[in-house]
Length: 185
Image (tube, rainbow, N blue to C red):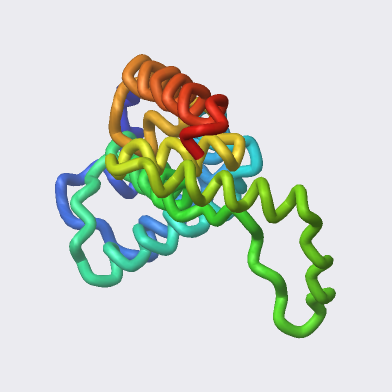
């Protein structure tokens, strides 16, 4: 990719000191943020916080450097590592998303009582999820309920977008067939 500059601290093939890694990461923070934004944001949920991903990736790289386990010897390798860690963090966060945001303990308003329509909707969602036996289908169902695009779900499930699209069509058809017929509920 890019040739390292002769004065660049990463131009040697030796383990990197923690201070040099930190200086390089901070110097290239904006560039890394733009790269991550381009490569990840369109694939996962739109509300993904790139700065939070980047700072978490930097913390992990700092831990590796502190333990002298960092093997990146060139700026391109460090950039690739940063993007890979940010991508893995984004996938992990997409997998662990909750359908309802947690309430802050001190200032949370009491929840509004559920209406009959709310109870019916929750009951239907629970019954729909209960009829799914494949973990990928369950993950697809809940991520889709949260508004994740198919491309992001494909990344989170480790499948191709076409495979996820086909699964989603089949799930929808199965749900429509089962819950349109009043006798099958």
